[in-house]
Image 1: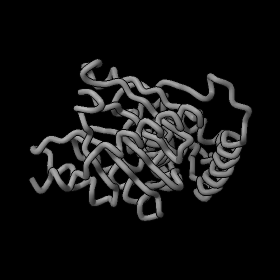
Image 2: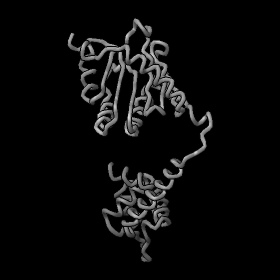
Image 3: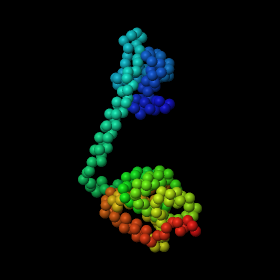
Image 4: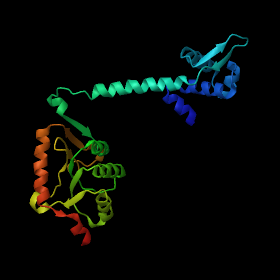
Amino acid sequence: MEKIKVLQKLGLTEYEARAYLSLAKLGPSTVREIVLDSKLPRNKAYESLQRLEQQNKVVSLPISPKKYKITNPELFKQEIKELDKSVDLMIKLIEQPKTLEFKDLFWVIRSKKAIETKLAIQNTKTKKEILGCNKLSKILYKNICTMKEAVDLGVKVKMICTFDKNKSSVYKEWLKTGAKIRIFDKNKFGPLLPRITIFDGEIARLTTGKPEVQKEEDYLTLWTESKAFAQMLKKHFMNMWKNSEPIEKYLKG
């Protein structure tokens, strides 16, 4: 039930949420009435009401038989505001400049899906330039959308990919983002397209996948914020770019 899920996101257990919703529906009620409406076991109803009372979400009325009623539901809004403040403080703490050691500059991301998500997020953070090598074998809507948003904000995007005439529709979707795409020259650089991406010349990734790794969940990516490493990959990318041809030439053929 959607209302129960909402209350759970606000910190209540399922039993507490069911008891709370029954009170919201019935108004001041006895435990028996709440049990009948919520279908909770009697002992769980008691426990849930006691915890809700401790949280100041409900109060018990000094009458016989005892009844419970909801206090101020606006308390949830206040708790959300306090949580937002705590999250903001945590984010500021995480983003504070730190002295980076080697272990902070390089880390490993496992699985193709995880790196696709990481790349989509980094697209939104890039300010000037994205250089990438990828097979572009399928339409990744999240990545395509974030790439287009980056281009619309003035980010220059260059991509190198392999070509398969059966995937022309996929390439056209990526071209719609405003990215410039060229085709990898296997004769000059060998049969394997390196899976690399460089962001603003400072952040980079290098991925090992098929044919070396068969299962997509076993793909390994070295992600780095080493500017020296990123510049090295950028130099290799630009060499391939100069020796590649625009994809439009292949799409017309």
